[in-house]
Image (cartoon, rainbow, N blue to C red):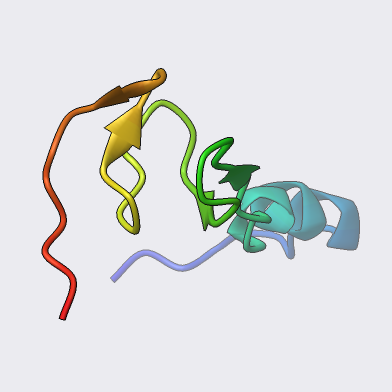
Length: 60
């Protein structure tokens, strides 16, 4: 089995790990119901997108 010839430096290890951290979710506020949701998607609480009702949400 192949083994590493030399040890990798701490800088090289850290460069590889830079993208392993979690990113903050970019949530936007719905102008109609003021709930937070993902951008460019229908609001799951009121069903509106771009000022128009796209899906009807049953309340109850």
